[in-house]
Image 1: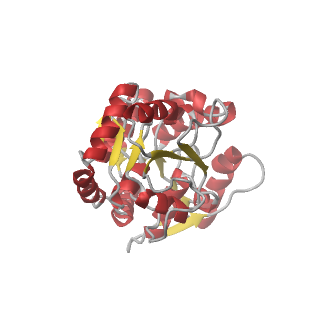
Image 2: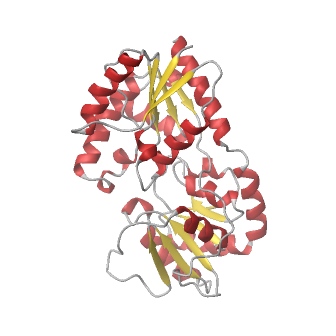
Image 3: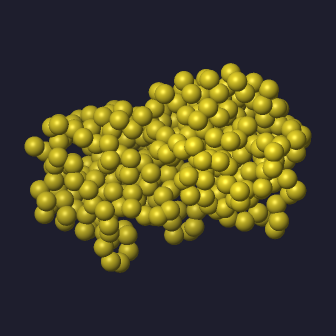
Length: 331
């Protein structure tokens, strides 16, 4: 039986980020009858790039792996077997200022080489696949679109008492306080919409000008149970991001029946699938109008969102990924 070795290190790093959730859910749901799946759960000493480009191929050779999968760009360029790489997005190319100099340089060096080297490239949206082809001149015949799926556990707990929203309701957004997430424009749009609701921003970082405006609640990073409770309790999720390769928070809201308004940009319309109120993320008035329109249309958007979220599951994602493995092994 062919052996697939998955570099799953990100699945074991807390707190989990998007690519860590992807790796964790993927390895937990991969169960092909005709493939043996083995995982690498931790790196070695020294620079990560040394582990990824030197030690990981050695592990693959020692185990006799027939295929290696890098779930986040860093596929070994010299390896003893075929390789599959997942590319979530190319934000480090489109918005380099959102990344540290070292991190951005690593991604910009490794990702085009991995995409050209791999026998198959998994992209989480057609938007990302098209971006990879356009930026890196990769042969489109070896790209496969395999979407993400919701992974945040759905609970039944109340909104955390530590989040002071009172009984007036709230609109929320999820994302670290960095330029790509476009949160200052959201704050201005929320002001102009004048909904009477609080605005809750979930994510790491500090407000650029010190204290956030009155009525805006910054929670910082939240554990899963608290994030789930806030999503279930929100009147609306707004996702104004300037660049997303998939936009998982949109689907996380939809699976809970929380209405969504999101940017009509990059992969977000594809992920929303007609079940969200869209807006130009650079137009504050358009964003304000979308917030008001979505709040007025909550019942329809809630139902449409639940139906759209049903299109995504990790069982399907894992099965499609296993199909990519079989293609790469046969290539």
